Length: 321
Image (cartoon, rainbow, N blue to C red; front, side):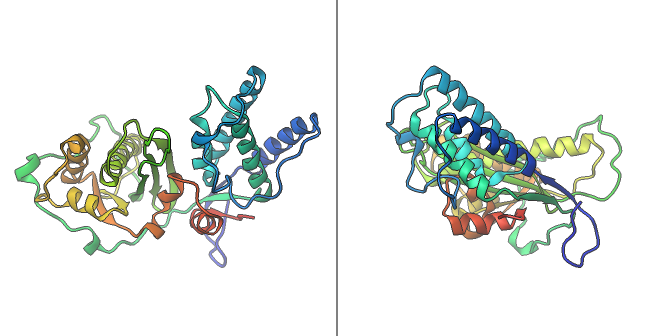
């Protein structure tokens, strides 16, 4: 239960503090067997000049590989319990589960050093709706392009009860972020009212030749997550309020997604292009532009500096310290 200042209304909250403390304790005990300690206090989960894909340190032994994989699983559970500030770093290290190197294991220790410095962390689920300016979401006629397309509503859904729930999604992509494969990385954060519900950070399955393409792939993934969430809410009897508000920081992608007259000039992006536009036409989503500095999904696409990371975390997590 959580309260904001003089606001007497209680709110649900989720804390991973105890889980993180136990994980740190176990890692320190393992290091102590070799007379080692965690690195000094870290202000970020990963050094900004470290790239896991460029690491050329020696490969780990079979025993160390098992230990590395177990630690990645532990960190993933911490992320599931709300430690989204280490999500992108854990996701990047997860790409090296098969052939991890010594540098990758040391990067895990660095994450634990960061967690030790920032043990107290709470995710609060606020039910207050977000107020958007309707002018940011222009409405167009889509009938000539996709016919009378409508959102698919599950016929066996129970009668909705209670107050309607507003859904909002932040979407971003780090174009060609992997310096070896040049695959982009998708970041998505979805809210129900003011409560973070879904967070997603994963490398894209294809290599995109432009920022435009990588952002459209991220939007297509976001549409699939949004549709799944809206279906789940309806099957739980929760009324869903209007289209999901999707916020993206690429103006070209926003224009091509929301204006029927916009023409796609790159045919290899056509599947994502029509998938997103049809969702707009069916009023599953509506898309607006947001400045990069306000796009919370940015923290799921690449490691950020201490100040910027802390600024984003303060908007999602409480008791950082």
